[in-house]
Length: 122
Image 1 (cartoon, rainbow, N blue to C red):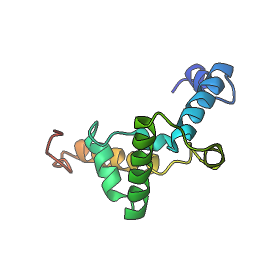
Image 2 (image 1 turned 90 degrees about the vertical axis):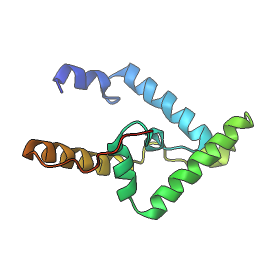
Image 3 (image 1 turned 30 degrees about the vertical axis):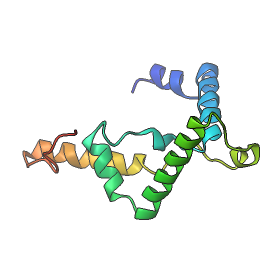
């Protein structure tokens, strides 16, 4: 990534990026979500594989957060302010595993091996 592009999207260097990050953080806190919860397992087989490799407790916690967020959204409510204050929307749990899965897939493609998964998404 170029230095110019990196400086544009870095919240520490760019005021607009900082404002965007704060807005996203506020929206995620209202529903008790983390940024990595927004990755859709039906969008990419890499995401689905990364979720399969995570510990069961992490996936269960993700599913509970998503269910709670859907419930709150249907009721047109937000989490109570005291619970919003303890949320950690940018504590990641999926990106490292997703990067590993993508590296493995690219390595397999470069070596001419069969893909790790051959089925398609519904």
